[in-house]
Length: 72
Image 1 (spheres, one colour):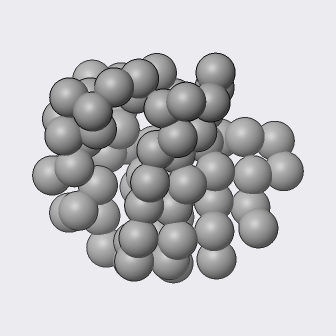
Image 2 (spheres, rainbow, N blue to C red; image 1 turned 45 degrees about the vertical axis):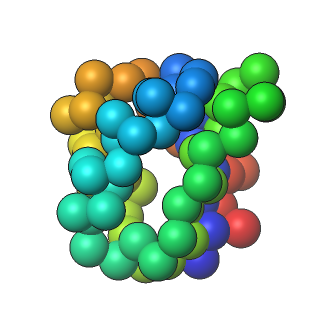
């Protein structure tokens, strides 16, 4: 399952800042952040819950909001 979220992760340093947090979430197989997209879309593949992903990004100090219709 693929989920998408709007974030304020806007540069490679920000991506590095969230890496350890996301890598600790059980069920994430792969994740990417499209920093070129104005909504800074975080795409997560795997079985992790939206709540766990949101908590990890929040703990890293970034804003996150699940996209409406963000599950593929």
